[in-house]
Length: 446
Image 1 (spheres, rainbow, N blue to C red):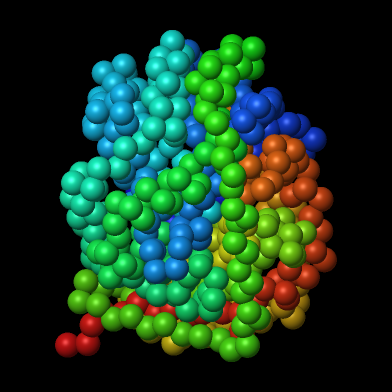
Image 2 (cartoon, rainbow, N blue to C red):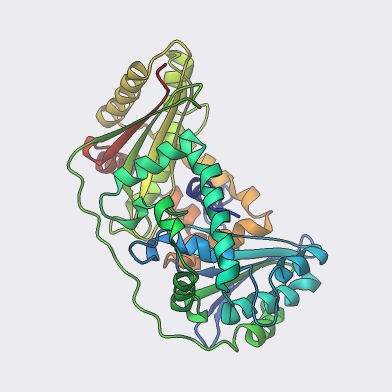
């Protein structure tokens, strides 16, 4: 059940897109209230089908792990399915399945979420089950130990046997000199191997409390219908005293870095460039909207600068794109990724990327391409509103990161207000060599 950071961030980048072309339109129209124990509750009405998505978000993830216990947040996510005093191991999932629902969970650097999608008349069932494991989880050392092997196998299959995932992991570790964002969510293998049931239990007791959680329900439900159920099942759980969330300052980078990985599994080489960038939680927060527009201008599809120049015109690459997600309590990444034509070496491809970045910084962006980029971003809202999960994920992530529902609802307007000058200011702030890590993935030399 998992949790590749890249997958989660990609989805959330889509989830936070939320507007029709009319920038003044609202996105999900959430309604909120807070239980007496401090638990935030959000309702997103969507009456297209008689179903609901029920999500519980905890404001704790891999970045909150004690030093030397990398992977414990994700390990606990697995153990949350192992039962309580009243619900035997496996019973949670069995009940969801036989009632026609589906469930899963995911862990990121900053939060962990558990969710079920069920028919609206089965909502009370999953609320009862989820509230039970919030308060009464039983972590049996005999059951926890085999689950550690499941986590290790997950790491082997998703990271250790995937050269691109290995490169991404190494580049993160080099990009973040001090911040825990450089530690993989799934954990480093030597530390995963020595995790204990006691450590998972302590993480649970420290962070899994109603006043550190958010309930989001999206679908065929109203506030008046949900409120008594939330009070009945979650409101009865006592709040806990929470330790302040640790704030780690990342030092200012002073030199560009490189990571080169060779593997016998690689058939086609690739090039990536990652820059340390501000997120919604960082001190340079106003730049994030301009960076979202910049990523669309530079690498947002077949009409982007990189694709037109490197793929269509110069024929150096078969694929070229840019990626940026503003999610993060502290910092995040701005990424360029390229795949070369078969006859093109990575040195020449990298020179082409550098030339496009230099051209951007020297000549700037045009008003026309900025407007097109903003329009493409805003138009995705039409699809965002149709999904039960999209709104729940967008709102849950925002609240977990210390933002508000108003921030999500205002996203289209803020994107619409971005100017070419702001895009260039953000580009000059972020696209500096000393803030970068360049990664190359190559076939092993024979």
